[in-house]
Amino acid sequence: MKVAREFPYEQLLSALGGLRLSESTPCRIPELELQARIFSGEFGVSWQGEDGEKVEIVHFGIWNREPGPDFCGAQLLIDGVKITGDIEIDQDVRDWEHHGHSRNASYENVVLHLFVRRGQRRCFTSTPENKAVTQVYLAPRQTSKRAEPARDGTIDETQAEKLIEAAAAFRLHRKCEIFQRAANLRGRDEALFEAIAAAMGFKNNKIPFLLVAQRTSLARARAADGEALLFGLSGFLKAGHFDQGDSEARAYLRDLWETWWAIRDRERRLILPDNAWMFSAVRPANHPHRRMGALAAAVRSFAPISRAVDTGNSADFATRFSSLHHSFWQRHASLAGDLLPKATSLIGGDRTLDLLINVFLPARRYDDAWPKLCALPGPTPSRKVLRASEWLVGVAPPAYFRSAMRQQGLLQLGEDFRHMRPEEVWRSFARGWTPSEIVRHVES
Image 1 (cartoon, rainbow, N blue to C red):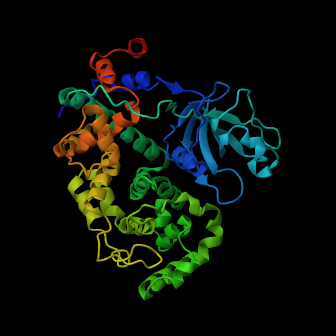
Image 2 (cartoon, rainbow, N blue to C red; image 1 turned 135 degrees about the vertical axis):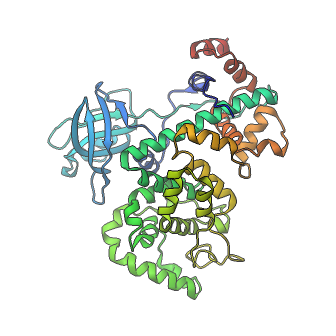
Image 3 (cartoon, one colour; image 1 turned 45 degrees about the horizontal axis):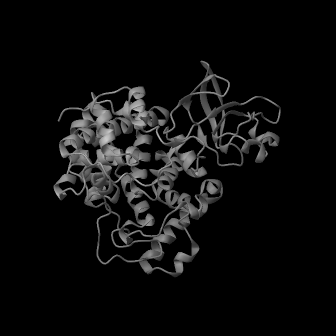
């Protein structure tokens, strides 16, 4: 299938995506999610500081296990000058003062202050010894004032196919860029480990899984105490579970606890809080405890998984995940000892497809990944895919969702333009207008 990069989807997004938006909408990203997304490179690695300086991250350093800044030993380029120091991430620029950082000696080595909200008046960041700290405002993506999607003006399937293909190409290219950015920051295998972890979390627990991977690191996850470390940093090891499970569950917990107990004190600050996780409305086979067990099994098979990505062998990659084995988690749903009706694969068919789409393909070059996406079948369509399709073309036959590429394109269109009428999006897209021409037309 022809790569759809000739269509001006990115211009379309920048123009139409900016209509009917509220610039005053405050960022509501939870602090843990904000840290994870910044650390993974999702917000980029190069910005303009509040005083016009050029700021570039060479390496984010390491998660701080002691009280103080979020990341220590980071390497930056500020106006081309290499600087080593700590990074603090806040929701609001004023949190630097509100949290007492300017009076806390632990923050003396901070060289970069990142934040996603700022007031009308300029606030400055300085260390206890009154040293100025470079500030970077990470502007959040604006959100639509119109929560309800447009219901009329659907387009025909030929037009829809062109829009979907262009949107899918844009979505995949962006995923490849994000993966490459993470690989440049922390190494390709570390980026692959984090991507696998995020995929294990499904949509509701993607961020906590990513945080656990970031705070553990691949090297530590592959060590002898790696499985206990994954469960310990997740906050999943609770004493009460010993009284709930069967003998097999108690034996498994005992092994984890004996290892975790010896290292818990040094890791205490990195343990995720209980409210970071979503446990409701989750099928037993997809319980976060079980998914963490699957991640531990994937770590043990990381070398062949990595080779499959390197060689571009998607079949081998899929087989590695579909054949993952864990003696406890094949039959159990949680650390409380909840039993599954029967022995169940750690990674099912739809989750394997999801790993191919969101891990394997982004880890490849875009030009190699695009034809593979076009040839890949789609998993069971999600509600978001179905809603986007209904918005775009009305009720579609089941065959309409069999392509992974089509599902990815529908997801992108649904995220970007469901507040608009599809015929408006198509007309602007088909004519290849520039952003200013699109805005003039739609506003008229």
